[in-house]
Image (cartoon, rainbow, N blue to C red; front, side, top):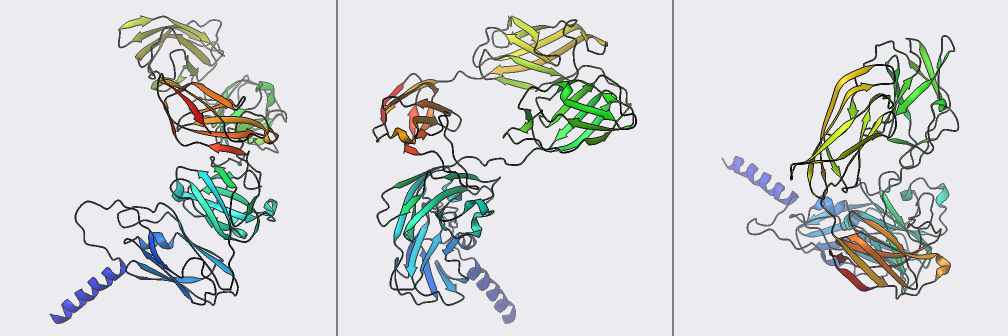
Length: 549
């Protein structure tokens, strides 16, 4: 019996040591954790010990703390815990006369899930002096715990860099308000970049993470009087689209599938697509093509001639440019092979349309796209639109945009109303001399609620230097973005939807009317920011005036 209780005691003892927790009960604590004691003192010199200690105000999730530790220089260490106190023990002697920065990021939590308001930095030197230059800044981010800022010496050659982490850099994080500081830098000039760690691996991934770049080199000085502003943008797509499949659905119809949604940078002509029968060298002429609105990864091609079961090649004229939505061009070097089909054609007409549709405003038209080309000279359509709230029939106009696309305009729609649309034709004629009787299509749709508009007006009181570019300002919220020029230090935004906005004044260096975020790899500076405002609330029917930046 004694042995059984002794074993139970050991189990409880080790579990409590591995994952200590305070007694439960009462309302959960919502105060953020923070570092309350540490050793050595910040900016200590002649440090000779082989460990540093950090004590927290609360019980913390130890794994999350360990995952948020960063050291400059990178040194090997082990972690030992005692209650709320953490000891970081170095595995080797520290280098002589060297400034070392310990950074505890702000993405750790206490046992209730609360995270700190700002990162913690501890600086010490193994010699009699310490690097004491600083750079301060502000990064506009909704996720400060996932935002990292790097400082690279200006001598860094970004043209040869594949990964940011492969070269020497200083690292920090912003506090909950977006402000950050680099402390204990060597005196000199630095490039400052930031990224939003979307996949939580603590490194910058070019096609995954959002990023931001300062507009110039920044000098690290003791006073750090110049402020570095950083705006984060979404990750850029640098990957070109690829053709991943060519499939003949029947003897007249091909489907090309791409790796991502595509668009044409110039109008596509059927002569740009070359299809050749490998067995006879006969050239087949494409007659029609279309991209389904619900899946822009697909391109359908209707042919004039029938396919057989031969092997075919498809090539594109060099003048044609197919790209993804980010502007990356489709790369192709040689004709692509596919097998034909003599399957019969299903000529029954069908449409690509959502089961429910929401219009942005009462003047927006509705488009229906057919799966095959329609003879628009022979085919006539009618449409009736019913206002479900008023039980009224609304006058509707139907016309063709092209052989595949039917356009319906319903007059006198109202904000916030729901509608039922009936479209029908006595006879549909397609381009292949097939006809279909008594075709009918039903669609329910709504019009969004009317936006509530207000106005913003103000002045720039900061010094303006037009040698940096055209002074411009943009206002953005979670769902809206508006630009306007600054004239005689004044600006205004008229009729913008109500909501909370942040204003950013900047110099439009290339005069393209939008803010350019630059790039990290290769390094391209962003456009220079003049001032960033706090959140400003716009209300319907009101003008917020005398806003100063």
